[in-house]
Amino acid sequence: MLILNLTVLFFAGLREITKTNQVTLHFDKSLISLHDLVVCLIKKYSKLKEIVFQKISQKEIDDYLGNVTDFQITQVKFAKNRKILTDTTQNAVFSDGDTIAIFLPLMGG
Image 1: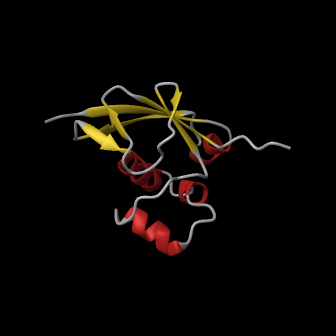
Image 2: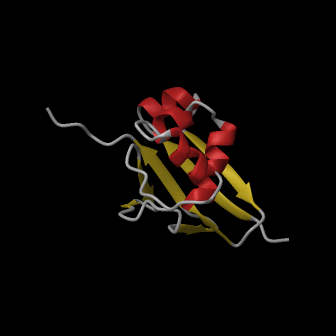
């Protein structure tokens, strides 16, 4: 059986929601998509759904969680092994040992 391990780091408000600064997730696949990761995290930390899908219609959320649609996630940012992901669609992929950071975009003022 293949085991893929990802370390997910949470920053700022996301850390408050998850009550942790990091979690290690295990998957029975050799690669997982951003979609797989988001669905897993929402199952584990249900309040993340409100942040990740802020200002998104319920239909789009349902489509995304049902793997029907492919849209950019813009309410949070992702970094893979310290590099910001510019493609935050379901097609971004991660492999064993990757570290994924999730944070809220910086707001100017």
